[in-house]
Length: 416
Image (cartoon, rainbow, N blue to C red):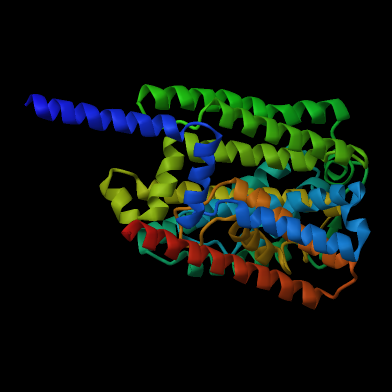
């Protein structure tokens, strides 16, 4: 018995030594390499792709990296970003919503009709558009939960129905101009943050990272689990703070940081917190990984599906509102064209898996920056829309291939 106790004590000492060895910058670097070898690439492909895209377009046209052009890029990215953030919620379950473009178009039309034509206050018009999106999400989840109708089919039907509603409420004129001097239009086209406020906001992510990191380190050490260590946390905080402050300085050389983009980033951060720090968020990943296993574990799969589709359609509607503000018009073209493609592509390119169970809210932000950089760069080069579609489609195909290869690598690594 005494021998067993000594052996267990020796094993514990070795495990404790491994915990200590994992701490620090060298341990964090080894963990990073191990994750890459196992197929967990994280945001690395997106960051590398964004750097390559920026380098290529800046070489072909130096205007691409001018501060004011990047400011315009961020304004445009915000509208598609909200729609992409919504599709991330649905993709996490391994489902799809093909009606997000039409939902954004209908929301845009509702803003024009309710606010401009009928004189309702703008908050009422926005609220009605978002509630309409939420109701469509409830309908999609009902069809899936009650009749097992594939989301591909139900949302394809929704795409046609919502498009019809958009054309109907806009009437024969087909478009409604929004007042250029209104707050909504100025918010979508010209309003930027004061310089001091933008710099203060750039400090917040580092501060939150410090608080949450210290709390996590304390909890893991109390449970005798490995912890990255103070040096790793400090390096992360310094890097993110320096990068954000440098970005603010660069944007302030032009018009400044757009309020619309700031609101989008705040929404992304809130959704990321909900996904990673709440029971609902953990349930989302569980259902996306294996719905039957999640059901047997006591998770209300039907309720999780309903909230995901509600969020997806509501955020698509909000994206339509910001799109109307950006264009200062509500028209039949809103939500059409490449809106669906760009929103879904942004989520997948950012790192959200089409197979469910893997992704984050940040993927919407990263992916939409890639998509908008491509669109902006091709526009500066005066290339045709046909080439823009083909290039964006090729980037999406590459992202899906990378996702599939990563899944295969993780599966083989797990069997090993």
